[in-house]
Picture (tube, rainbow, N blue to C red):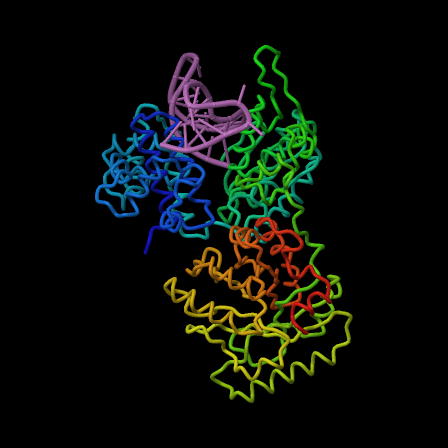
Length: 589
DNA sequence: GCCGTTTTCGGCCCGACTGTTTTCAGTCG
């Protein structure tokens, strides 16, 4: 197995740490940190980029780091990166995983207390704290000793739990806090910010901001840290506070006055990478950005800060198009905003139908059945103002049926659909398993009774890249296939993506006019946003599917739209924004 | 060590909070 982006990012960050502790030029340290960030957020495998000889083209990786990585990938013994890393005890990198412990503190503790075993570093540090040894170190005290023990406990605790929340969970949690905050009379406007506003698939912390007068700030902060579900207060200042909720999740709150709401919204929405790009851009025009506004850096003049009530005004002042939060990830959005070429991204109201709904119709499926019948589902589709939907249950199990049984079941379903009285056009479809050899779990003879099929992988996820690619390409060759369902098979924080040559698969899908699904099921969000962007750039068709197994889940479409937006998808990139007429043409009906 | 619509040299994001200090260093987002 080749090293993952996560592993390479960790190595680069560790080298940055080693440089920091050995007193290297601080900009060299930053360069390695930047390279680490870049690799971590890359949309392709850094290993693949290296293999194709394009390492140097990656933003933030220059000639030096390129060469070091080359050496590392070639598995050269005693490679430069490894050599740099081992200058610092491995216990330092381990200890740094605890929040609030950075390079300096970790190194000091490890060195002074002679902690050498990586596997027991946390236990050993806690033991030392018990003997009051840390408080005696220079630069440390009673309080910091206590904080270090707490930080270790938080880290160890977090290890056992899910690290990040699924988007919908974080969203509902934030709504509860907002409701609570509104009970305080000094609280004005209140907004969800950070990764939640950017609609990232998984959310670490909940970030909130409140409009309030500075002299009410204290009251608001006090109210916030009294939130009933709080188990501890991690920090509290004049304008911001952090609480830890019973599930171990952090919630941050910032108070800001109305005049600066725009710059605050911009700052606090992030991403960090986006804000850095913004500040770098501003600096070229002699401006300095912060959450408080835009500062003119002209040395001769008196310092002047411009405030902004709205985010739009903030971006406009800098000569930039307003950038939707979903694409503020520090890729090329600032450049594009400068040129005025940020596209209008697809919106929830553009969606005209849903191709992937599991009904309760008993097709005697291989996997789970939906819980609601055609009638309820079509009613919901009407409420959502859809023009069309497709009932796409899992294929009938193969082991329990003869070919003719399967055909009869599909015909029966077709008949039942015909009987429906609704303004919504309903297609007869199935979600068919892609078997390990690339054949489909449905007899060919059954295909003609279906309007189209979705194909998906539901077993044998671990396969080598070559075989997996062949498997999918073979499955795509069936003419009834119109959607490749949850292409990567990932389950957020449960199962990794499958390995496949996506360039080949995207090319083949495009050639065959097959849409790649953006499955909106909260655990999936698959395609992932970064791959959506690749697909969009390549000109692939995409289908946003709810994958609903119950009526209410049809509303999950919203999260699929968010993924599409994060992948820079425009309305015309998404097949199910089309009119019924166009869809029928696409389906060859 | 990286990078380029004022630059192949000379820059490199900004502020808050905390603890240990008595003006600052470390860490975080």
